[in-house]
Image 1: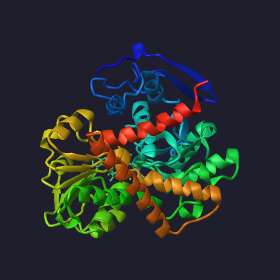
Image 2: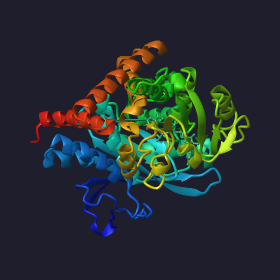
Image 3: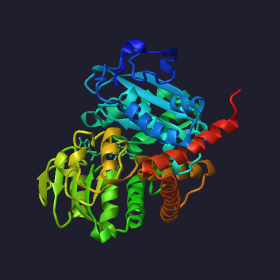
Image 4: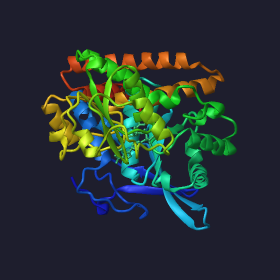
Length: 455
Ligand code: NAD
């Protein structure tokens, strides 16, 4: 599908340096309105277009009426800001930051903040819609949002990152808050950025740690948040595989990504006796047929700026090879769009868990489904992080703190409930797990939207 900037039908209102894009129906959702976003290659299917295809499949199955469908697709608010920052060497650099608030019918909007050089409005828009379905499928009282800044954090100093983060919050603090929109970590950000965000937001609005989650424990964070997404992947892997009649000890696993999600998932799987035979990160991948020593790899990466580069106790392979290994379970836990129509035929794993957001393109999804590959979709598979973020927010609002065991137990309970609902929906509706998860989520958002009335 193609789009062109000429067909752009959006209105722009400026306030306090914030460009708010009041988006209309996504006839042509991919536009450059300020001239600040570089033009994209529209021949390739865009992230938001892909996310919408999954939504459409489930909406068709539910017979969702066109007016509600339109309301659900269009984002409530899209914000793009310029972030001028003085660099350590005195140069002035201007970065672009985004926050897309997709839907708030079920509660305040919730979603991570991504720092990556390829971040653009289209990607953030797609990820914001995913958050709406994700919070609904695990039944958290939230809507969906997402943010991002187009930077490569590894090329910036800590001081520069702090200035960029604080300046971004200066620009968008008005649209954030505990009962509006609550950011959290995503790719390229962690508890460190969340502490800066809290501090900067509170300069405008006063003490309220519930304004952001994923904070350090010393800053009203919660124990178990850092491990939550990876641990959730592990909990759901166990449910998924046992429903398909497999035991952990029989499973050979390949995992792409060794950051927050990938490393914690690898640790959990290793401790649960899965044979993790391959893991990789941006520097390459490592393979060992009889199982990798995950604790040793964690130690290596900890002492090597978070990278696996130079690990010598396994065979080095490429990231493409990792994806196509002959394994039982493949877990993409790094970037979106890594499995496409171009490599789907080479994927040999019969089961895939989408730990990353949107790692499989819709055309690849179709090809894999037709070949009988079972896929646990992102909106359920990586919902552990937002679930523990919700626990953190609840505790901040109550000035109360749970211990790690309670956090883990509650996480297990929420994810198990959500998994059982999705599994049962896919059986009764005779569809795959992704469509089942979307159907559950859409029904919840639809009910909340309709009950609120439209006057
Ligand atoms: P991260 O920045 O901590 O780690 C990303 C990992 O991906 C790193 O190991 C990096 O080296 C690797 N990587 C980057 N480019 C790569 C490439 N080209 N090939 C192979 N590996 C590459 O990010 P994260 O927080 O672990 O997030 C990973 C994914 O999980 C993202 O899609 C994110 O949206 C999703 N997610 C994260 C959370 C969370 O709580 N952090 C929650 C839900 C979903």
